[in-house]
Length: 272
Image (cartoon, rainbow, N blue to C red; front, side):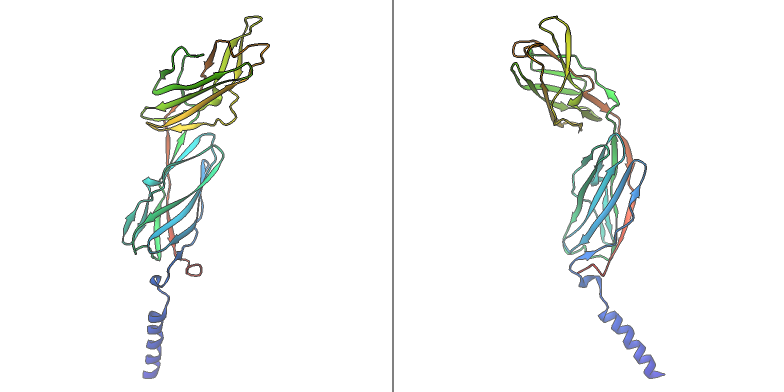
């Protein structure tokens, strides 16, 4: 009986002494949690790793809506046994029906080799691209003045050029409001008089690189307007035209989605 007890004690002690502890890993990998799936978005997390100096994970957000989503990771936190740390990743946008992946990282010193931790990923902000349109007077080109204010937007004409084949105007727009704005130069157009009939004709912006751009207070965006009107209708080199802003400037009251916390446990088979 005594020898059996000693043998069992040796086995237990062997397990304690020789068992693989967290501190014996130089790099820990964690199990991948289930995706967060809603009607508006999907959140997937993978590549969850930690060393003594840092802990990081890759988060992929899929936007299922017709609006823009803004991910705000700095409002989240990684929660460890020793305390909490906030990721340094900046806000980023996910366009409608698109996905984007970013790495969230927290840094420290000799503390992140933990068997488990949890993460509050922050929140998503839904930004409507069709909410409150700021009605804006037409802008005459060639310009009689180089700047104007519409709502909480300050707009400055930085460059204008015109030839018979093409007219191009470049503006800088600054948003100074309390909410979130969206600027989309795809909506603007130009109007001019047919040189033969005096009929008012309208042509769309042909800048192929435009896309909806969200702006917070103090943010700036370049607006590029490119027009091609046949010379037999309007000679843009000499014509006076007007830019019609339509739905270029939008202000929205955002909707917020709080993301649930995720729990991560060590995957010893993948750890090093």
